Length: 169
Image 1 (spheres, helix red, strand yellow):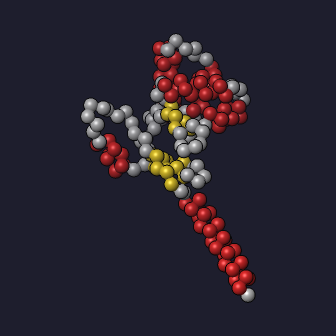
Image 2: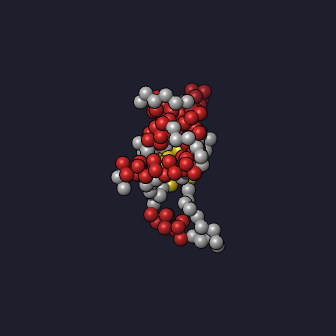
Image 3: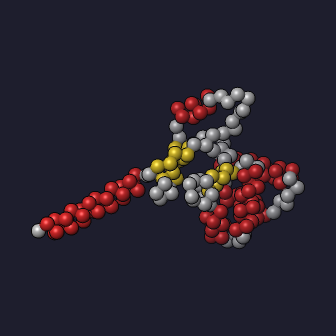
C-alpha cells in the first residue's frame, strides 16, 4: 500500500475511533497523526513536538502526549520502552514485523528483520490464547560502544604499564 493510501486509511481509522469514543476531531489531533505517518523511525513525544514546531504547527507537549495515547488505543501507533530511555513510538499501519536490538551502553535501538525467527514465533501455541503480535527486544552492546570500550581499556592498560615501568626504573 502506498504511503498516501496508508495515511488515508489511518485518518479514517482515527476518525472512527474518535467518533466511537465521543472525542473531538480537532485539527491538532489530525496534524499530529499526519506527522506521525510522515516519520519512518521511532520517535519520542519531545521529538514529535519539536518536528511539529519546526513546521510551524504549535501544539503543547500535553496535546502531543494525549494524542499519542489515543493513537495507541486506536492501534495506529505502538508505544515502546527500551531500557531506561523515555518511551518511544512508531506507526504500525503497514509496518512489517521486526524486532529490536537495544544497546545498554548508549541506548541506540536498531530494528532487525528475521523471517526464520518470525516463523518460529508465529508457530508457537499457547492453548486458547491467540497472540496479536510479538515484540522481541535483544539487549547488549553495539559495535560502536564495544570499540570505544576496547580503545578505552587499551589506553588504561598502556597507562598502567607505563606507570609500572617508570616505578621499576
